Length: 122
Image (cartoon, rainbow, N blue to C red; front, side, top):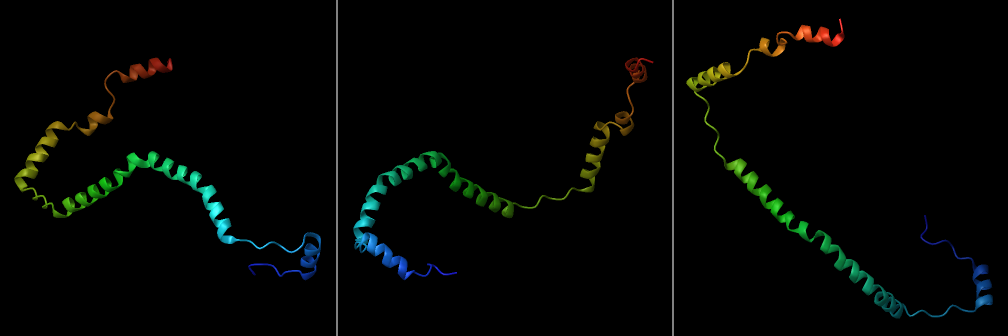
């Protein structure tokens, strides 16, 4: 694909006849005028944007520092000592004493059949 289409010499001649030769363009002056007109709107946009994000800008380095500190802590923390056999037995005893039996959790409390039949109306 070409960047520009091929110029039509007949069209160029017709336009020159109708409008005359095109004027010379001072590209530097044009660039200066465009920049001068765009300067104030661009400055307003630049100053409006940081106000919205200013409180959050401080969080980025803090989050990075927290991540680095967390990784360093996780990598340098000593391993937890394994439980001895006596410790495991003590944990099992505590769990057995405090955890209800599975049958107590699954079976309904007494009188639930009467409540069910009353709810069904039979």
